[in-house]
Amino acid sequence: MGMRSRMTMICLLLAGAQALRGQSVRAVPKVDLPSFTGTWYEVARYADKREKECVGDVFMLIALADKPNRFQLVNSCKTKTGYTDTNNGNGRTQDKSGDGKLKVTYIWPFSKKFWVLAVGPGYEWSLVGNPNHKDLRVLARTTTMKPEVLAEIKAKAAAQGFPVGKLVMTPQTPRQVARRESRQP
Image (cartoon, rainbow, N blue to C red; front, side):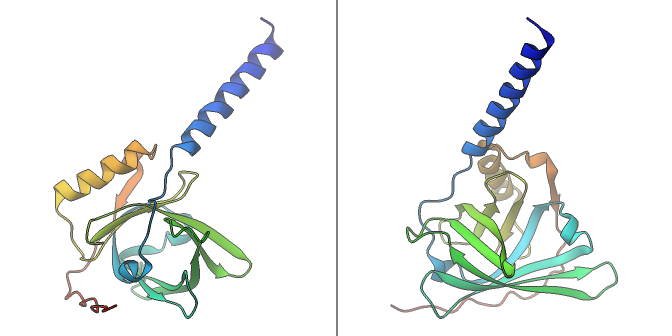
């Protein structure tokens, strides 16, 4: 086999491996947006150059917007200098199926895909990533998480091809957690 043929085969194998890895990411089939709203604390995440100044107390506030399948998002974190860095975004489900494929826009027209990969039975935790395996976050309703629950969540991420060894734990200052509002139909 010639050098050119070997290079072609290697390129095809790498492309095939990447395609298989990308196909393994699955969003949950249904996200109940009202249950998904509220305060989420970041337990762990992949290191992200946009958030390199964030050293702790990372959380998100999610509220329903005035249109169906839409939500408002506020990301906040404590920085190395002690200040708080906050970003506001507008989100929506990617399609009308109500699955876990979400799209968030911080600066129009640029948006980022976030897929809800898994949620706890009572929406007490969530695993959020994106289809290209470049972003992964473990979120919880409280600032701490039992190690066995975190291990279960990491196993779910690994099953979808995410290298969980890249997760960085997010320090959180213990605080009183705001209660979620009870929604009556």
